[in-house]
Image 1 (spheres, rainbow, N blue to C red):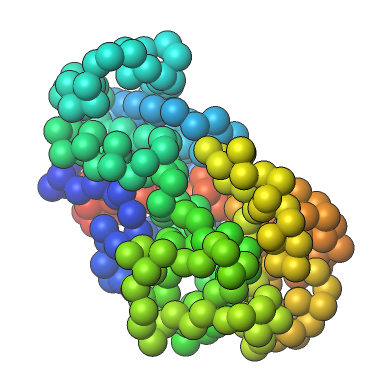
Image 2 (cartoon, rainbow, N blue to C red):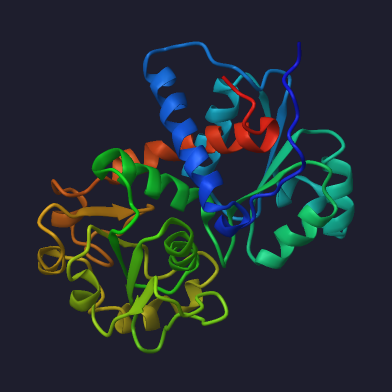
Length: 309
């Protein structure tokens, strides 16, 4: 008997799932990863096809989604704007209508959040945000799951975000509200959080320095100073962010057993020192691997719901 199909749901930002649904995805991630590590055959998405649409370059997103879908028994189509009508004059709405009639699920990695929202509005199948300028929900799924693996529940904990007010920061804000932890954020004064994407709340504390943000944190995390699409600002950002580097002094302000995470790629000596990135508190390689496992659980949930073994 073919697998059941869940009601149409999209994952365009972390807040598209409830806290309970996120906990379900984390639990399924644990089970799916355990099966993977034991070489146990598990292919609930046989005969399902994932279309991956890339407007932004990718390493971890492409490898994790492609390998994950194959491991679940499905197949993958890779599309870029350079080899499709997406990069020419066809409206996004028309591309969505066509692509979603031919595949079962779509992952898009693009620039403006509005693009993926327009695509999803006309899609007949689930659409997953593989990264936009505003949000990076799949990465935060992996980050939170990695914390749970290493330290148990994240509820009631403290996470420090140090650096750019970017898509990672805004997704961490959503995670804190949904999962019940405190996010302490420090950005350079000229690069503050956008209140439209980071509304004030008890879960969010804006700090005036990296040391203040790291104080008492269970997890310290950061990202590159210049995200894709903002390369023209690179030199100005280097100057502005010079004091927002995660180093041993910053980690010392956190709890003695605090973890360090980075979504990668990392620039040693810029946003993080090699001592921290390659040090004993860093879990960046586990974090990177967990993209594979959380995305398998996410695709399973969007396609099959909770009716899985």
